[in-house]
Image (cartoon, rainbow, N blue to C red; front, top):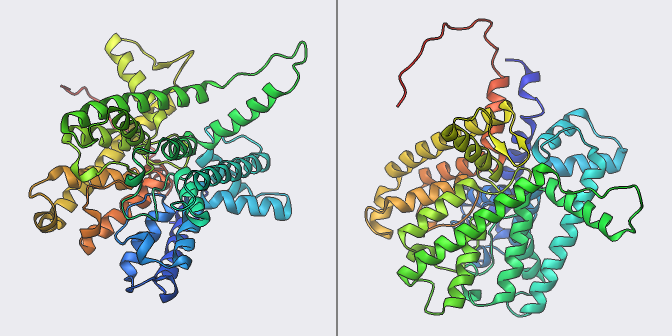
Length: 454
């Protein structure tokens, strides 16, 4: 196995993310980061992984266990992980030397864009401008809505955490205290949605918005959103609205959303949005009905959009699989979305990603059933298989929601969840591509034969 293959552009983000996690764990493990009792290295590693992978699962309370220094470290890890450390590295080299290496160009291009042939420098500057403006506005509005609950640091922390889809909060009950606060809910939801759309879509919307404000020239037609951006926006809207309706029905039956229907609608909409891998909650997840938990598991597994702060198999994968299923039922040969058909390569990647993701979730589920059986019997309702499944999908989708199992994980269970968060943030397709790149392609083909299916 050559060193060149181990240092391929696709493998480089894996090493950089791992290095950032261990550096963050070392800082969080130091006494200066602690507000009270010491935090073990495993808990610090878990927190650093959760922050860098913008997940939000916590084994210790962020607001009370860590000092201001520790919270700043977590905030920096969230910001680095949300935008991608390779993005920052490339931006640094671009501003410093006005040129970027081919390795960085390929690595950032494949992680942020559906088309790697783009002007990296201009794109990165637009991304940075969008992020600074969105997070600053979010922090300002949160502070103005509740200056006491959202102090200046708290407003910045929650704004960055929401936009990066991290789900880390400084309140012990997440945002349950703001269940009926329409303003706070809308700001957090807007940040989550913008962070989950993907930087490709954000930059395109920003560019088109600027063009709309300029005087229109004759003979110059206005550009519209691309097919990719329209697919992302329509699929995201469909999942949010459908999820909110189903969660509203589910929680009105259980009564956990409260008697007020207005608050219940707002809570259902918030939970549908936050399942896009954000991790905040205004409802007690541990007391939600199993129908609602199943809906949330499906939303968490799908996640956000490619090149965003979100995890999961991504909205485009879901849309491609839905188009493929519809084509198969109708006897069609192509998976059609809007005005175009998906090419065979994208369809194969969608199928491969989904199979790999399901396999990873099932393996982790089986392992946690062995390691956490006794824990569930003591701390949760005995035999609640749904709690472990919810935890596994939440970790893989880098969501951060939990029914209450996370603080009680065994050391073995914490390691399993750490691996899930790491793979889920970078994307299973990255690891598959690296594994394929490390192996030689066979120079022969096996004879083919039919197989009875179904």
